[in-house]
Image (tube, rainbow, N blue to C red):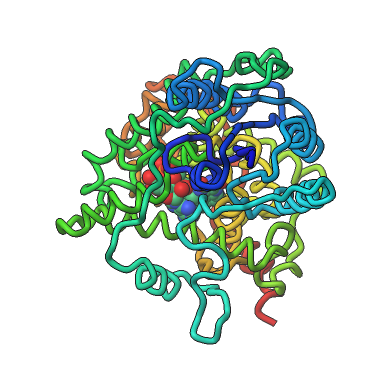
Length: 482
Ligand code: FAD
């Protein structure tokens, strides 16, 4: 039989369960990626994610050729509506089965159901394999057989289920005789960004490494730092985290490989590895939350939080614009937003601080922030982003209580004590002392003058007062208590 492997968010040939299943079951295997217009049409024309995918596909294409051992193999790349392109290609290739990694997001579920239906009508099938997570939605359940809504017991159950043996990895045999020649109509190079109607971004200037090689390079670098992760991860000016988010998002690293590595280090007593593994479990946790409670994609996990009245109107729009532009007058928040806007990355501590600021200082609907992050984060993942935003707004599972309101100045003093991160992203403030940089409106006029900062001109005055905002938030959230 003939099989078609449809890559989506698993852009690698090594340890790819869909590819492994196709190779185990079919004599002839083709691989395809579709630049899906149903997703792309809504994106800005400069999008680092599209460029990341495009560059990663170049590697997949080359890796397939290398694995096949002949130059006629390679990745078929299409540009169109995936729900139409996939069944049409399967038909043209006379594929009896399309193999794909399971995707738990609402759009993906709908798309895959539609594709499955058309394939069935053609006498073929869609075979979905678990890949994105270690355990999917029905695999880690409470004793009552219900999904977990609280992280700590989930983590415990997850670790127990994982057991002690390493996660098995699928290695690709080489040469891999089943990898078939591409039909002439599809035997072309991966389209350029311009072919796809997109423009080049600053991805390469930022030196964000793409593809399997990029994921491996970042991982290599992180392995040397993993032991210190528990101590460094909260400080945005320090190279603490792995920066693997975008690779996990697009599958240019294997989650099973990461788990094995972390576990190996834990066995050697690394507390950093233990903390990092727990972060990978948060990722599984939010994926199962989205899969089991798909209503979180639009509303609060705790429905009583949908009663909150958020700010609206011109003032709310202006506050939102200031937040997006990194012009709130709170340096750490502004530096965080500048990092996001310039690089597509934001440090986890700052996602919490900037997110909390939008919701609990500006009084804006968390979905506004969720949408902004969704457009700008390279590692945007609906489940983790939604989970993060529901955490900061206190409406989510296991969220922080609503009366816990991050103080953006004390967060700044604690996590960027020397203002190193602020100086990098808000250069207007770089002449201020380590003490004044966290709250320039409190600085002595002489210091501002010496640093060349005129508030309201070189850097904004705070758009809201912390104490007043805190009071308004406690009132706003009052509806939840009743
Ligand atoms: P590391 O610290 O090295 O962690 C390794 C990996 O673990 C991450 O790449 C990620 O896959 C996973 N992870 C870590 N923390 C979390 C978490 N809290 N929840 C789920 N997974 C986690 N993460 C995303 O992957 N995509 C998002 O769209 C996203 N949006 C967020 C929005 C908000 C408001 C908040 C508070 C957090 C969000 N996170 C999101 C979680 C976290 O901030 C990022 O995963 C992390 O900062 C990515 O950087 P890293 O790869 O260097 O992480």
